[in-house]
Image (cartoon, rainbow, N blue to C red; front, side):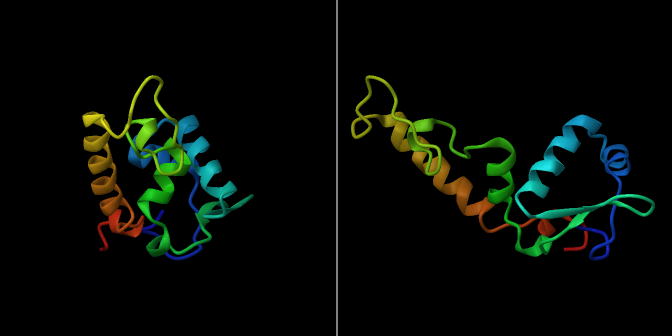
Length: 122
């Protein structure tokens, strides 16, 4: 979608076919992005989905959180979905320290890349 001209709708079936993504799976993702205000849709002839927000302004971190939830591999290191592990002292846990580094480095990349960065036009 980011490769198309601004506000030119594309059908879900066309995206699914070109990118070899199961239709229902793609439909759920696009609905989440629309619900969050990143996409808009148009019904009828010439309809489909299109970006409401410029793809250059949509970070991969934002999309990942919408679609997948936490970016952190463990709930005890998540910034937005934190959950304390049972029977664990996070201050003494070596795994916790390593997973925080993994989270921080992953976020460094995902927060500085956008949907547009995934296109061949870049």
